[in-house]
Length: 148
Image (cartoon, rainbow, N blue to C red; front, side, top):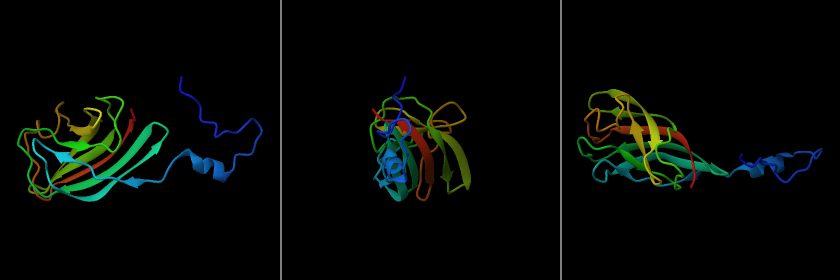
């Protein structure tokens, strides 16, 4: 069983706002990698995370400025190493600007260092559907995972 957060208080003690503010940290910017067979250059609109104990919350919005590789999975670097791979962790979409198509995906950790996009076909986006990122395509994820 996980350890209960007590904030160092005892039974009957008043729990102040100052004590509650120690539960977590402020959101922090980070620079994620973006690959799809090759490194894809990008514009980062949002890449932020916060950590509460071992739980990492990530909000991400990047736009590709170069092309990926057809048939390869899109992978995005994590700010802090993940404990598990294969954990379904959030929600998101990949927007194909050239066809004005939005693909709803499920971000999941594929290793300790990257998250990928699980698509409704049961494969990673990029493999199925067999597509490559292109200039102005967007990736927007919000996800949570356990730090190593």
